[in-house]
Image 1: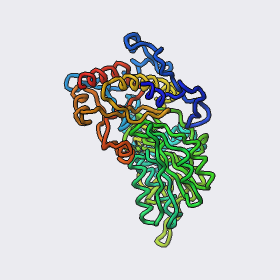
Image 2: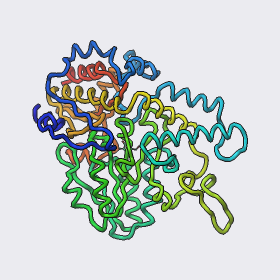
Image 3: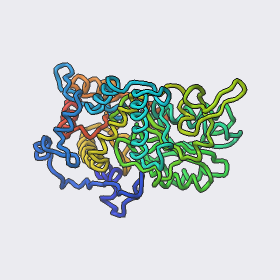
Image 4: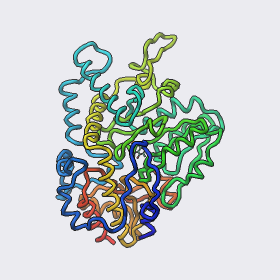
Length: 454
Ligand code: PMP
């Protein structure tokens, strides 16, 4: 147990702490795992009057209609937040308002509804820029999500500069969406992929990361938070190391944007991508942040309407970024919906969300680790949201379906991150992942089922 505590909360043993990622304007929250915190019974009684920041948890939960769903007669417990998050009615209502009052294509028609939809679309771009600390809304390109965003950067910015034997740096923590697009362009250009290893807690081994960097390094694409283990990576240190070799860095923020304050300027990311649907917004919308000079240098990888300033049969002049990368009709409604999601989490406060989720994570991790035969996969000193585990003698499918029968939704599988699970000798884990609308009681109901199982 102390082993686990030492791995997961080393600050308890060594108070020197480590520097946070995601901006220098806040300190990482590290809560002591010291047994002196509230006991479950006392804490549970207080669940109903818990607050996230100033907002009562009960009020937050009432904003998410799906959280009142019953599944086979049992209340839904949504612990699959790393896959996608549920939507507050503010987001759902925003979509309805868009279609009832604003629907039009943007930028083109000179009529009232075109102005409304353009305002909605561009307001969301500005909200996204502000949310992640970008210098200018023009540094925000709308895409379908993280996957499309990484593909865009790979095809538009990185591929055109690659030569045989150039190197792209990844880590063992990456989601398939941050592996396959790089393999595709490596195969086409003769470039090579180099992968930074992790230790047994699931943390990048920094000296090994540094050793991979050289004059051959042309780009690095790195997870901010691992979707399979929950590890928060030290992005500021990684980015500055890659920059010292003159290469640019993309940060995959799919699992960080909903769980902590993000400041791309402070971390000095060249590109940062995230998905609206993991941030309480709609599916089909996401963001690529790119530094202006890099977006200007990148080639568009899709051509069509909206992205041009002039077309003849002989040649095309492109718009400046971000329009240059937004060929065709964009996902206007869902961009507006994502803007409403950003408003929602900002009102609660990302630091408040981070602090509350950390309490849940700390509690869940401590209690899970007491279950006989349960092995936590991913015990990094800084983690967000994810509690991956396996239980000796029980398949992940069995555990997943026992939880599902109790109304508890978790993911059991490879989480689109096979290399990192294989690093731990596994083909899959059970992965509860929490959000700020989850409660201690919900964690207790998961623990009850697991205790019955073993
Ligand atoms: N990267 C990470 C770390 C992820 O967790 C995910 C989604 N599971 C993705 C990329 C891909 O995101 P999307 O499916 O929204 O494109």
